[in-house]
Length: 442
Ligand code: 5AD
Ligand code: SF4
Image 1 (cartoon, helix red, strand yellow):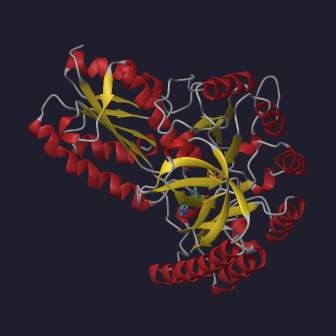
Image 2 (tube, helix red, strand yellow):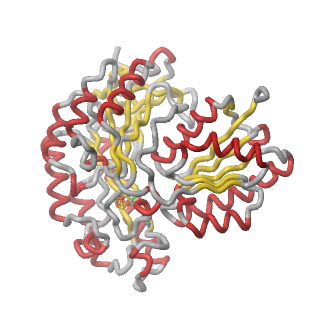
């Protein structure tokens, strides 16, 4: 291969996708490509797509249109599109027919084939489409080009078996497949030896980790093993499904010193009727009990959640139940989404959809309430001592450094290069809804 070939990857969606992009980057680097931020300089541009809500899809089509000019300027440029959107027939057809400048279409189950697919394009000068319908076992361990030196993602379970009625994920990511414990622990040890201080274990439902393994294991046991890895300082994980969040796991979070005190536990709705129609597998009472248990067992632990507003048939009464639940549980943080019908899911076939105006109005009410609660909770941290892992310059202001507390709150401190990658203690001086400001305790 000739010298100095460049790539750029544009990623949409969740951490899972960001991690897949790190793996795509890892393979490209092994092929001799280097990363560039300048699209005009790139020899290959990949889009890693998301399909979870309609606006994610619209963004991708907009970007594809934009990329046409780079192809016009450099006809040898390879443009590829992969990720969850490409696991569905309609978007694949649309890209193939309407976006003739796209050379490569690939799915979520075959990312490890990227090098072969690129070679095929180079040899044949033809467009290549390879989307596997089904997972063929686990995607093998791949090299990752990590974004951060000190913090890394580790995928522990792929796919999802839950089939929440609004969600497209099980259709595009396939059934649950856990990675063997040894392979995860080895990866964690390798990363720690490489200077990584914090790992985040990724899965659509980490709590069902191990059920499908020949040598059965559980998420709690995996945490126990990871807690023993030398030089690793912090272990995070997401996402937890409330139904599968066990007492045993709570015990581990409490007692294992490296496991961070933050739990992301999506509730989606506070109404039993809506929860049932979403096929979430728990009631409002069960969920409240779980969170209260967490808050009682691990004082100071943070709990974040996801909400969907405007699920088909959601009445004002149902929505008020969500508001009441927020007031009662006082989450540290919440991601709030407007329901977006996804073709192929049961909820999308319902004819009792909620008007856009009503959905937006509910979203605003929920966001306003949550912002206020997050602000009040963070205000209470002023004057306390927090341990933060210093990540580096803040994106918004490079003169200020940024770290995260064990509870996953962003905390700004004065610039100090020697602190990057270190766990340090700070005293919280001020707080907003989403960020803290602290001063180093020396
Ligand atoms: N519409 C809106 N939000 C959705 N989510 C998943 N599917 C949809 C959908 N069709 C949200 C859920 C989930 C988060 C990752 O995305 O809240 O927890
Ligand atoms: Fe989607 Fe439900 Fe699986 Fe989460 S648990 S990925 S919301 S189907």
